[in-house]
Image (cartoon, rainbow, N blue to C red; front, top):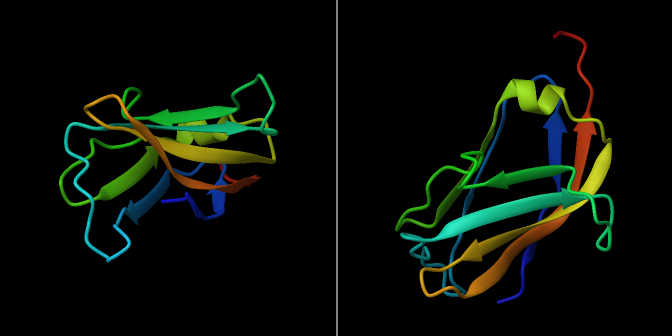
Length: 116
């Protein structure tokens, strides 16, 4: 299945939370138990620099489970330290057999805040 397109808006100095339900073409939740996930933000596809990484390994993506939920949870101190205004991202799921699937892609915009 091709990656779904979704754009994100992140507010600096605020905890960034976003939840998705990964479903099959027929609408059933996909079992993500024993899977890992990684999302990287870059300025462009060919850019060597990662501007932000969310993953199950760094706990910015909560542990995955049988119900297809994928939840981002980025602390305010991390969003406050972001130095870019926009970028592109994709989200890759790694299954227990080692196969990988791009499930989400899009643009991210970072909006500065006043209160620290």
